[in-house]
Amino acid sequence: MPTAVSTTGAPAAVGPYSQGVSTGDEPGSLIFVSGQVPLDPSTGTLVDGDVAAQAQRVLTNVGAVLEAAGLGYGDVVKTTVLLADIADFAAVNEVYARFFTGPVLPARAAFAVAALPLGARVEIEAVAQRP
View: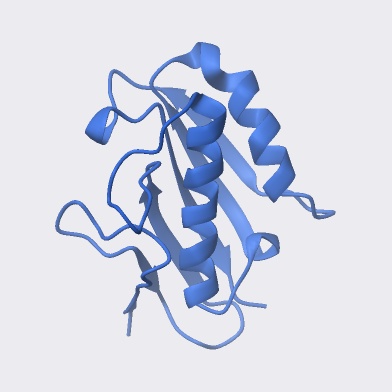
């Protein structure tokens, strides 16, 4: 039975969805982390700074949801990166590479989109697997 994953370490959902959903507690179960935008969970506002600062906050938020599920970045098997401007790809990659460092990196897709919620420049969702 799926269960919600939630934490105060990441911003509350800005719509009718869960921060994350777990398919179970047994090995091989999946955790789906909803797309995170660069909101500071303590203020609920978009972080100041360039796309690198936004990517840092986004990935920190992803990590908080993973931690609430008892997992970490090394358990992530797939990510999707959404960019308001594809020209930000290299800058986001630099930040992303600091969070995902294991011998097996997650599969990933990256897309440029017309716009992101709240004027964000980057949004990232993740799928993790329990070891």
